[in-house]
Length: 132
Image 1 (cartoon, helix red, strand yellow):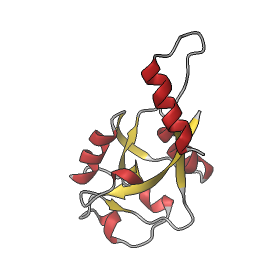
Image 2 (cartoon, one colour; image 1 turned 135 degrees about the vertical axis):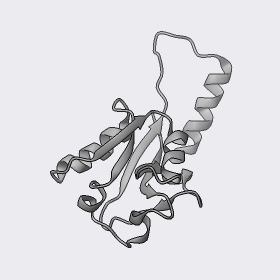
Image 3 (cartoon, rainbow, N blue to C red; image 1 turned 60 degrees about the horizontal axis):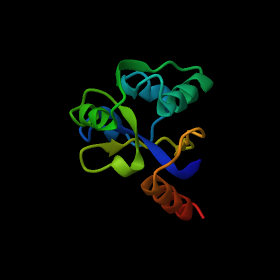
Image 4 (cartoon, rainbow, N blue to C red; image 1 turned 120 degrees about the vertical axis):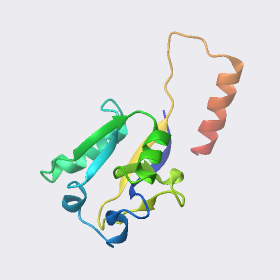
C-alpha cells in the first residue's frame, strides 16, 4: 500500500568536483565512481533505469543496502550517489540535473494469511490517515 512519495537527489561531497560544477548532465556524472544501493532495491533500479534509458552505464565502485553508509561514503568524497531528499544536510551537496526528477514510493505490505497485532493495525491506520 503506497503511503508517500520520496524524492531522490543526486549528491556528492561538498568539495567534490561534481558539487562545484553547476548544473550537470547525467552523461557527465556517470564518468565518476558511484556508490549505489544494492541491486535488489527499488532505488538501484530507478537510477539504473534512468542511465539505461540514456544509453549510459554508471561506474559503480561499490554498493550497499544501507543509506546512512552510502551517505557517509559520499560525504568523504569516495563517490557520488542518489539519496532521499530527507537525508540531505551539510555533509552532502545536491548535484542539479535539469529535467531529471527521481522519486520512489514508500509504503507497507501485508501478509494476508497472518493476523496483525493491535499495534500494527493502529500504525497502519495512522499511515492511511496521512495519505488522505
